[in-house]
Length: 86
Image 1 (cartoon, rainbow, N blue to C red):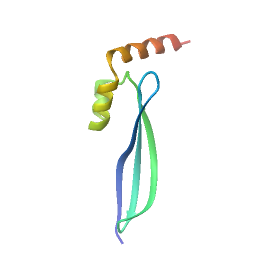
Image 2 (image 1 turned 60 degrees about the vertical axis):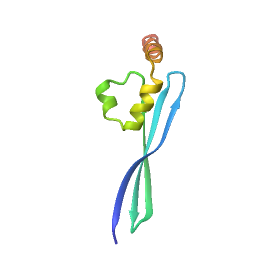
Image 3 (image 1 turned 135 degrees about the vertical axis):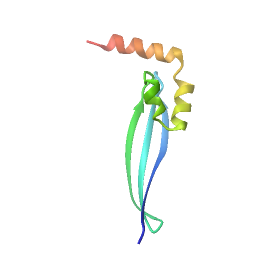
Image 4 (image 1 turned 120 degrees about the vertical axis):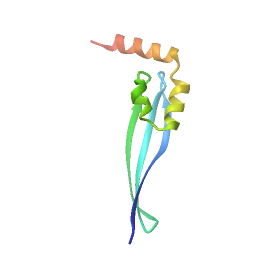
């Protein structure tokens, strides 16, 4: 009986006015090639992510962020954050 574990990014979505990138990662456990368990973890990549933190994302997430997190989006998000502070 062989158990294996695989981690995959199975869903990447761009949502909202500020083009938040939502990433769902699945951890799949298999016994002899048959899936016996699947758990999920989600995280959001905001337009103000640092270059160092973005480098820790997968190549696919980096490409999506580079495409949708334009300078206009980054500026609008920074303004939103400034105006939201109380």
